[in-house]
Image (tube, rainbow, N blue to C red; front, side, top):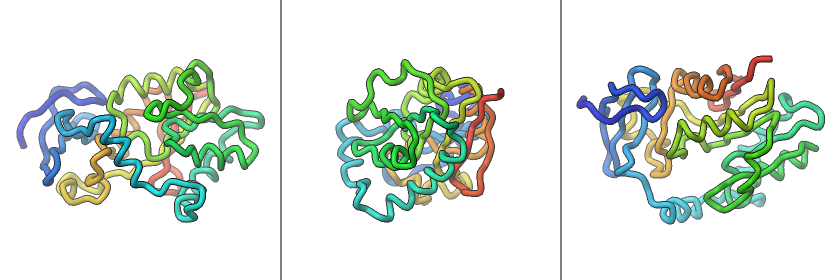
Amino acid sequence: MTPSSACKLCLANTCVSVGRNKQREFVHCPRCGLVCVPPAFWLSVDDERARYGYHDNVPSNPGYVDFLGEVVDVVATLAPARGRVLDFGSGENAVLTELLRGCGLVCTAYDPLYGIGQRVLDERYDVIVLCEVIEHLHNLRAELARIGNCLAPAGKVVVRTRCYPSLDSLPTWWYARDATHVNLFSREALAYAAELCGTRFAVTDKPDIFVWSRPH
């Protein structure tokens, strides 16, 4: 392992390279547990948008709707009556937004990659959802601060992402092969990220869905 750049999450200067596959390198922070991909390997905005275009993330895809339904179930238990929900990183079709609205929740979509909801971050939300989003964020600390600023007192953040199984497995792990995934988390790294939002980390009964809660 060789020294590498400062951590995108905790800013420690003790990060090390832990391997690479045919496309890119993976760098691990022993302080907070984050694994990230150096910027030299990031896709351009146009290439990233094109990559998302291959996803079948539409309301007519029952598998995708069922996948989102697990998040909807969690959000429905957390959102107060007449509470406000933000779908942060909604994607072009904002399917999760529509599913949450279908449950009677007041939900707003936001995705700067598609020009959706440019001014909605001036508001405050009772629940903010990042469903398969946090692993894509280039300016990780800045985005976490933005999320924290949008969160109402006693608010919740629902995060869906996969935690890496081990450092040795990273070069071949299917989730790390997605060229748009530039942040890979352990539970410790997610807990650190939650603190940057002024929240506390907790697991759910789903291994890839986590809840960050702002103390009352």
